Image (tube, rainbow, N blue to C red; front, side):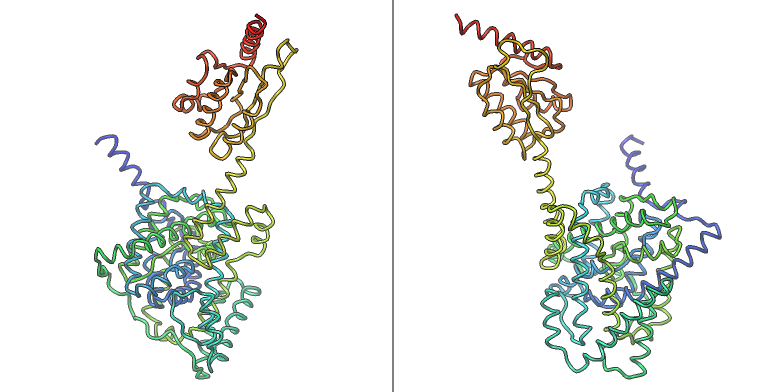
Length: 556
């Protein structure tokens, strides 16, 4: 076996399930079983709600929770992550359903899953660490707002097509509210009150399930004229590939990239949050981001094959899993089994759940996604971070989630570059030691920070303004970073000074910068190759001797 094939085999093996993913000790298994049942009960109404909210249907939400939940648990990179349909993915899928129909969702799940899988194999899991905190929080605020607004039609008893602008749709729904608005608003209010009450006085009880059960029984007893979930399949559908064609794949390529980007970002953020939560066992604090991408990619592929939705890691359900005492991946598997049992044993009662009840669950979920303290911290941190946060949130709400992340990253990068550019500076320093005759003709400059495209013009102009010197000594030992643009500007500065009769000496070129400065030709612009020095004292001696020779020549 060649070294290359051996390396590929070793690296791919690290992305596959291992024997130590589970602990079969009775105490650990008992803890995982309890956590899995708890999460399954919490996830059931969410899976139904996200399926409805996306426009795909409640059955797709259940199928995704089961299939993707098991696959991601087995192949993912976190021991305590719970995966399935999420609000953010529902927001992305709604316009896809509106534009291409429900049948496009399994295709997008397959395409997006393949992209995420390839990203994991290519070891791109660490990329998410480059997303700034204000972008993440702005993204979360925008998603939470969209999820809340998407529930307004169901809350007022109006049927609106999915995929439109959520704010416009919500406002139109309020104006179109019909005779059943009293019933639906009452159901939403009851769900909200029950969930808030359990969250405060009995947080260990899944308030969402209790709320949905109570209002469903009440609606049945009172004969409430409200829309229900409707008939659900009594078993998992058989896996099958959806109809594919080159034209369809081309048409869905852009939505698939958006789905893949969201699945990767949300899953990695969820895994990172889970690893830092209090109560997480030490062995679960380590997660593999590359393996997490592989697991989520396979989960979406599997969900698409069963006619489900693309899946991601779910922060809320993962948090419940951790708080319930999960230790290994068994808890996430059990959560999927609990939902599977509902599909086979309880689809009749589930089909009678009012859609307004699910709207109430998602409204509460959306408000819990946003921390007022976190928003206050971001806004009060720096003006640049506040702008990035607001821009990301607004674009998420008004345009598109993925474009919001892209614009947020661009705005954050702009402010970061501006900050680094301002930190880059050039200082004219007095010559050290006792003064010598002719020292007034020597200019010593120290370049600090970074010489890159954002700062090179300013540094170049500042040095070029001083034309009273016969010799310029450039101290580069404090220069931390140089890019090609900065090196080119430095070369132009040296050439300009030399053309104007000013001799340039360079001191302290760092080994990391030497190759770039040489390839760009900075050192070639010097009058002589001996004008490069490692220490300041020899450079100043050479400068003073040059000034002395020039003074003698001028006198003659």
